[in-house]
Amino acid sequence: MEGKQLKKLMVGMALTATLATAVTPGFGSIGGNQEKAYAATVTYKVTASKLNVRSGAGTNYGIIGSVVKDQTLSVVSKSGSWYKINYNGRTGYVSSDYVQSSGTTAPPAESTTYKVTASTLNVRSGAGTNYASIGSVTKGQKLSVMSKSGSWYKINYNGRTGYVSSDYVQASGTTTAPTTPPAESTTYTVTASTLNVRSGAGTNYASIGSVTKGQKLSVVSKSGSWYKINYNGRTGYVSSDYVQASATASPKLVVDSFKTLGNAQQVILVTADNYDTKSAKIQTFEKVDGKWKQVLTANGVLGQKGFALAKKEGDMESPTGKYTIGTAFGRYANPGTKLPYRKITSNDVWVDDSKSSLYNTWQQKPANGRWTSAENMDIPAYDYGFVINYNESRTPGKGSAIFFHVGTNYTAGCTATSKEQVVSILKWLNPEKNPVIIQSPVSELDKY
Image (cartoon, rainbow, N blue to C red; front, side, top):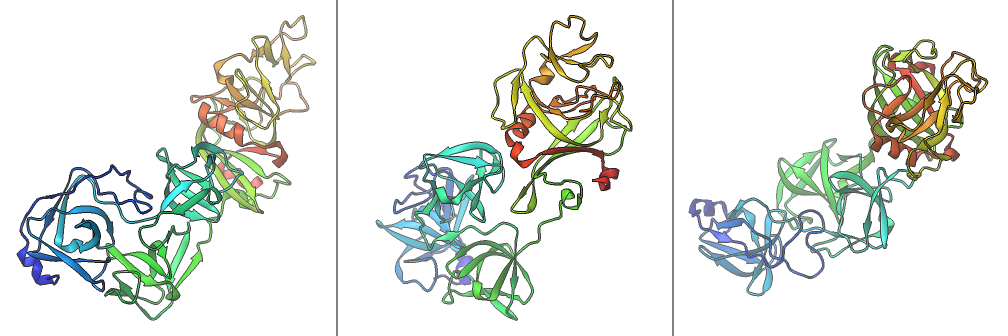
């Protein structure tokens, strides 16, 4: 009996799932032909006096036996509204409507195993080789795939979002028809006047409702010619023949409206709410295949007195404007930047003496009368950073030693952010892409 009348016969009965092998939650928890009973701390309660066991996940499949009250079930996984179980040494399915589970963890959905095929595969911050590497995975490692964007898989990587090339990831070991993760940023719209939503991926499955023309769908994945959707809080399937998938227009980025970028293909944008604040927002953008993409967003700080209307030496203000990127530097070895890199020594200084012929240049002690004032470079703020090519004409009094460096409070006229973000930006910067940095109050971005 599997009708609604069975619900009247519900009796609480503890059924403890047998743990055959520990399973890691997430995509790829179950793969290949190896059966794994799900784990620990989950108690199942049969709520029917008698429940059919079928050969597949649906009432259209043949009955291979039955279970009754007080019988222990070994649950392998969940497929839609069906539990996959070990039944007398073979695989069977029972309706989850008549099996009650309680515990800390639900059984995993049947899905696809995603495994790395390369010896080492970079995990990047975005869907492309131009994005910075945030780590790596190794051959045979299982991945938790969220979606697919072009030829890249979006994955969960150590608690953050990462991307890996699908060329080096093998989707295999499906326990049902292969499931393709949905593409990112896609709108799914119904094209039929009325479209049945079914309990499984086929017309042989019962209709559990319908959707109408123009309705937007929340697509989970694709299985053959069927889309798996979220339907009123439960899982349903609709034929892909009557659903149109169209890419959602990407939101316009602030750099899309800039007219002064020339041949720059990388932009660091530093903005503040007004001239007087020392708090800044740092964003990086890169042009890929003719389109700008945002790479990073971080909090930063400016000079103690904010942005300068007209920068002067010693005013504790950061200059506004668009500038090219100079030499990268640090007190340690090159962290991996493609920029020219100079390791700081204890003798390195930056001359800020407006009367010196070496004003606004990097020099080494001793001064020997060449300057009367210079900034020491061997300090924690300069653990890593790069030169902002400001006042390249070295106009006396206009300002010197303008850097992008490490800092979280305020600066004497530079721009700063955390060491982690500085290193990330240094690794990302590529002189072949003619990078520039733009610094401006938000209200004046139309100048660029």
